[in-house]
Image (tube, rainbow, N blue to C red; front, side, top):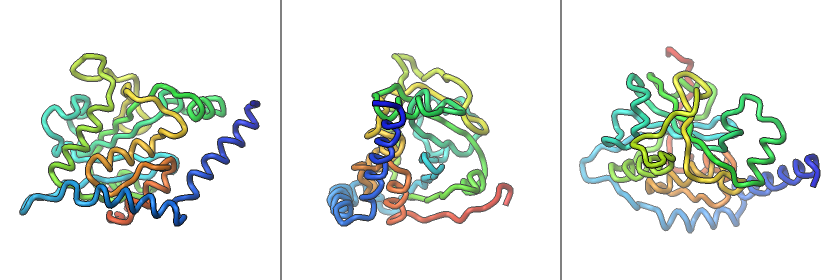
Length: 236
């Protein structure tokens, strides 16, 4: 298959995967998934809920948590960001994610071959919507147990190769950030957005990872039970 034909095929697949987000069939998949995870980790009586934030970067989604909320030793890699108020984590193809200009070959390789993956961690302070003024940000609230499950999911995503913490591969994409080796393989049906959906589902939120290949699918699910934070310029 030529690169051109492969590219067309990729676009068709991505379009097909994006389409069910508003279809009756996808609504039924969501209903079944939601019923299975509804109230999986209800808040304890009188216990404060932990806010987490889902951020859309167009083709990619990230999850933001307050660093102070992380259980002890949950993410040893957070020690690389001692002054950060928040940590954003995202997952993706190792070569594509780290490349400034990935091009057609890395795009096709990431889609059609199972490839190594990385986690991207960014540390920052101040309002989340202020740090990401051009992104949609949805606030989600978790029970203590749900937050611990989310933290555990991310913890288990790092490839530490028997060490106490994962070694940084290199600088990240913006601000104080870095890339770290991850365990799973990336491919067309296990994308960054599928990983995000699985993380939220591990936390007990009513999210299905079926066909959550696109950012729009993950964000549209989260809008049903989360609160969209208005965009605000940094410093406001």
